[in-house]
Length: 145
Image (cartoon, rainbow, N blue to C red; front, side, top):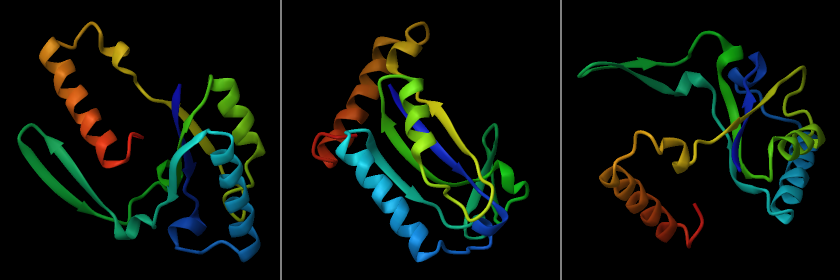
């Protein structure tokens, strides 16, 4: 089971306040544990939303919205992509995580959709298109997506 582990933004992260050297080192050690356990597939921190963009869709129309974005508690400050046995394993790892922010913070765990979740709506052409995209990604990343 693949999950996205989302570190929620805080006022500090949105101001671009960097972690202390100790917190940075502690998180690095946690990431090493995840890699050694075969859990972590990818992960990184995100810069504050003031340097981000959003694109709003309405039919064929597209509108670009410049950051910063309101509702800090709804923003993501960083993420991991993990491969775990189940949600219980993901929860156990998150509980071991050092606090990702200087003060109170939250981490959200969300499972990815898998191709079998789309069995009712995916045509053979739709499956083939997604398979080609996955193969292209795998070849760009030496077999890992």
